[in-house]
Image 1 (cartoon, rainbow, N blue to C red):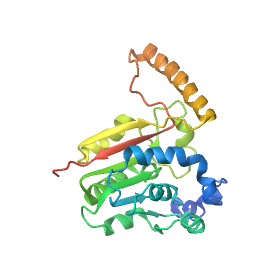
Image 2: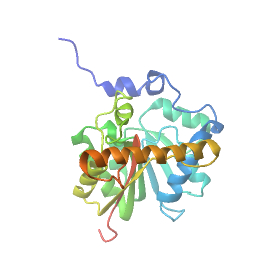
Image 3: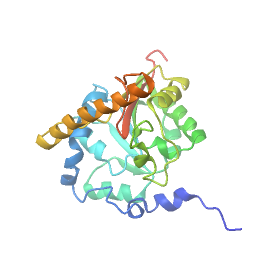
Image 4: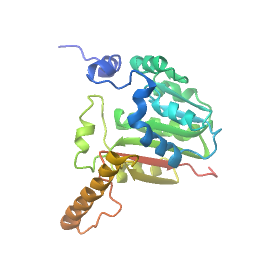
Length: 250
């Protein structure tokens, strides 16, 4: 019988190389295409207090950390399990990115130590049992009134499988309903979900935004024909954002 090895060790140790694509730019200038989206995310969903304690889990090469600092957030740091990604962050000069297993790093955080936790393209990498443990740990480290910002593939999207099956390490996919179910059952008092819509910042992006609105209308019509639901609040993008809030009195 052949030996059974942990696939995560093999894949994560060569995460950038094995995916055969550049997950990190060669310089900070290479972050430019993502800046409008990341700035919008920080502006709309980060705590208003620029001194808020923010922890990013699975931070990659630190693009979001870099943008948040540019926008005035002083107390943000992250952890990532990929040596390549952490090395890329150092090459880019982005500080506050450390290497380590998220499930090891979280228990080291004191109770109620973070105003905000960010998990960008992370939770889909865990099994259900592992994710329950992660959710409980995030809830523990959040201060009362804190928030958890989650970005993950959308299983409801017509092209959701493209994102989910695009990475061998993905274990789970979510819809707005399932992620809300998980967070509310784990103690969060409120969950808000948002589409990954194009962010207008120039002519090309404005055209994309207009076309997205048109395509979204067609998808809503399809949904209405099949189910009778007009899909006004449906989420059709390949990825989506969920924000879970911890009760301020907890």
